[in-house]
Image (cartoon, rainbow, N blue to C red; front, side, top):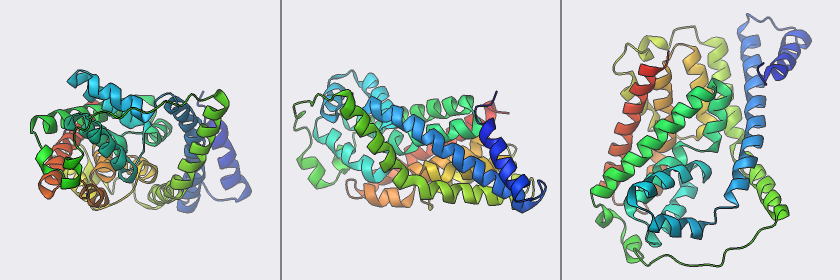
Length: 324
C-alpha cells in the first residue's frame, strides 16, 4: 500500500468533492497535484531531516576534519562525498566548510569531492526524489551523484590546482588540523538541535517548495502531453547537454527544482535529461560561481565547472540508458 494514499484521498476529496472541480479540467488537475505534492514533500522533509540532523550531532566538524586528513586518499574522497549528503544544501553554507577543510590540512581534491556533493546530493534531494519517483530512482541518483563527486575530486586533485586558489586561502593552507574539545551532548540537547534544524531548513526552503510545486502543477495541468518530449526525449542526443546548459543560468535548490523535474518527466522528458537539468541548477549555477569566485581564481572555476559538467552529462546519459 502506498503510504501517501490517505493524503491523496484527502486531497481528491477536497478538490473534486468539496470544490467540485472536474478531474479532467486543467485547474482541477493542477490544484490536486499542487496540494498533494506540497503536503507529501513537507511531511517527508520533517521526518528525514529530523533523522539526519540527529545523526549530525555525532559528527563534530573538527573530528570530521581530523579523520579526513588522516584517511587513505581514495577513502577520504568517498567519505567527503558522503558527508556532503548530510551537510549544508547550498553553496553559500558549503563554502565555509570547504575553507575549513582546506585550512585544516585536508587535501584539496578531497575537499572538492565534498564541495560537489554538498549542493547536488543532500537530505532535501533524497526526500523529494523518494516522494516523487520512489526509492529506486533516489538510490540511483545518490549513487551517480557520489560517483561524480568522487571522480571530480580525484581529477582535480591530480591536476594540482592549489596555486589557483585565492591568495588568502593559500596563506592558511596546511596549517594542520586544529584540535578543539568535543562537546558531549545529552539526548535532550540532540533532540533540541534536531527540531531547531528542521525548523531552520523548513524556514529556508518552504517558499522554494511551493514555487517549484506550483510550476510543476501548472505544467501538469496546462502543458499539452508530449509537448516537451519533442526536444527532450531519449532519442534526442543533444537533450542532456542542452538541459545542463539551460540549468546553469538558473538558481534554485533541490526543494525548488525537483517538483519541476517531476512535472517534466510526466510530460515526456526523459528521466536522465530532467535530472541532468536539476544537477546543473544545484551544482553549476552562476550564483554558486559568484560565491566560489571568492575562494578560487577564474581558471580554477572553469576547470571545476568543466569536470563537474562532464560528470553530470555522463550521468544523464546513464539514467536515460538504464531507466525505462
